[in-house]
Image (cartoon, rainbow, N blue to C red; front, side, top):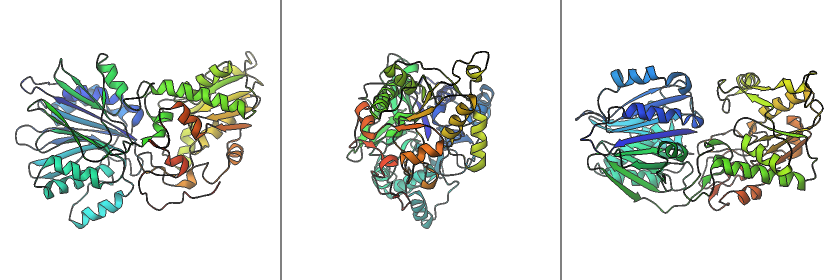
Length: 490
């Protein structure tokens, strides 16, 4: 998962000297989508090519006021009319500066600088085709493939930028919500025809500035009176600072397949999934918890004494679960925010990080104040992917003295790989792959386990199997995907 930001000064006669600083401030608020690497691109001055700067280090540690000042004074010198930025959560390639975005395609003083959110299922095949045409790559990142493909299409179309984007959007299969500075020093936004990953923009007419961001919640915080506009699936937005114009173009027939996991986990709680969404993600997650509580009762499971969550995205659902059953919701599980994200870590490193990251509030189980000693507890999580986090939490609660431990997930069983940005390519690492719910329950060590059904999720969310991608739950993918081992029977 990744996040992108862009800003355009729509009135170059009135320079905006702090464009980079403003973009970095927005980037910091987007850390829920990635914290492992970041980068910035700006339009070059005069006839010089567009330039970029990037770092394969965590945003939390390195995107500081001191770093920003150095960038502005030494590396990204001058007044710019366009800036783009990206923060990365590495999924398919190593966490290095080379793999950080933006990436570029350049011929002399003509340069594309591009950052994207998403992934291409057949990225390596596309890379090999371009390598056969003598294109060289600086990284293993899919955005590097997209920008080289775009540059090649630009040459094939007589250096017509719009036609190059249309060709790229029509021919590349996969997820891409991208921002790009072009040789003509315009900003292009493009979203794949399925709209797997979010992309929004807003125009501040008072300051003559155009902003785009992966999440509308950030734009609404910046401009409370504005109404952020969703970049539609199959849409290209062209922003020209020289004329102050903003034009929309369609490159294909839309076929929306929004990512269902965005509802459960990725997006900020104050963001919306689509322009037509009735609720923010927090509102949906609360209601998913209520739906989970209804199904918990229907299954005949006992009512717990208390409900807690797996911090932090599980909190709204746990609150909804507790509200529906009229029982207390208490924060019992503690997660160290600064221990680093472990979603894509492997092996012993992942297990060690999880044990360092997860703890429980032991005060509730001490002899002096044994509030929950012997009490029955249900833990609510947004999803269960590998299951090791669930196993650690259930063990901590049992060892502390809880009665029985139940576990609820607002996402259905996550059984199959994702090829559109989450990238969990090895099915054998997914705890529910090829297993029954009873087998998963036994593996994570809880007394009761219930996953919200897919139909239950659809009942809450403004969508269904026709406009939501549920491939990681059903193995039904909206596009062709590589051969993989996801066909296990359960």
